[in-house]
Length: 463
Ligand SMILES: Cc1ncc(COP(=O)(O)O)c(C=O)c1O
Image 1 (spheres, rainbow, N blue to C red):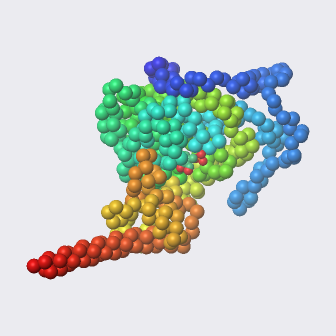
Image 2 (image 1 turned 120 degrees about the vertical axis):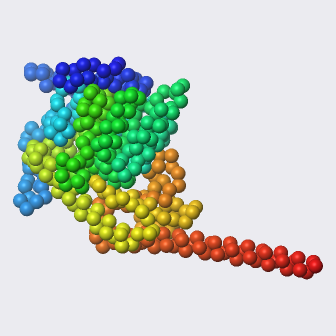
């Protein structure tokens, strides 16, 4: 428990003291834990129930890349047999090495024995497993709010107490976080996890400043919790000058706290390479990542070999430089979409909604100006369908599911014309809500007037 000195990284916090009871019950997978030993030279392995690849139907796998040259990468025999075979639970060693190099290059961290990466079938799976490592059903967990519903849904199913931490135009609000922790009842265990989406938050599109991240990191040390940094939109940052982008929690931890070990960072390939390949990466303290891997060993054995090998071939072909250039192109694409949406919102929604243009990612978070008592869930689920406009009501992003006036509009797939029409339809919904409210009011007034008239008539007749 506590911090341990480590030669090149100063102090390293050992997160094991915050592990859940349920994760202690997972045992090493009986077969998977022996697989690394197969690599020892001269070993004859009779261990795994690996199928014989000669019975598989694939002779070749190749991918052709977008671009003027339409470059084709064909897996060689060794890569093909790895792609079709069972692999290691933490992920393909070559891909892990590539990601570890990427994290060092992008976040400026040194490679030490205190942290490691593992691969998952998308970052969502890794986040779910990481929650199992640090929480037991019924625990309190802190969520930057509004929050990505993919996380709050499984936390609610585990009957977690969802503690909402406010977020504004600079990202998560550290002052609110501090108030929550300082006023935490003394007879209750403090929450062990804070979940946050710091870049282009889903749903708000807001990016957290470095100053706020530094304060959150200090609070993590003071109140002894782990930060789950879900950075699915990290590579879709609209700030063109990399020097002006806020560094990640992973990058800042050592500088701010003089120690490492409190950040579990989740990256996703879904938004930049392919969502269907289901590849996500966890980077974090060795003890915690190993626990996640232990869950994988027992639950789903490993992330897909086929997609890992394809991704690795692609990345080796690109190199880090090529990968980052590709991400810049993807960010440029979404920045242009963001600008088109911002212009359409300006045209149709001024006075009907308020918003901050997103600084990364693929979402606009619109706060509709609705008559009292109206909310976006009602509006979208009834009138929205009629008007042929679908968007996600704000309620879905409030972990404790209150009515809300906001909606999340995604601009990733729609054309310029559709964006314009969508904003026009949302404007119509707002106008109709006010019209309905006005008519309801007028009806009530008429009813009241009628009642008064009848009353007065009765009085006159009685006189
Ligand atoms: C904030 C956030 N985290 C995680 C995910 C899941 O990503 P993946 O496809 O890597 O599982 C999403 C997907 O939309 C997301 O928006």
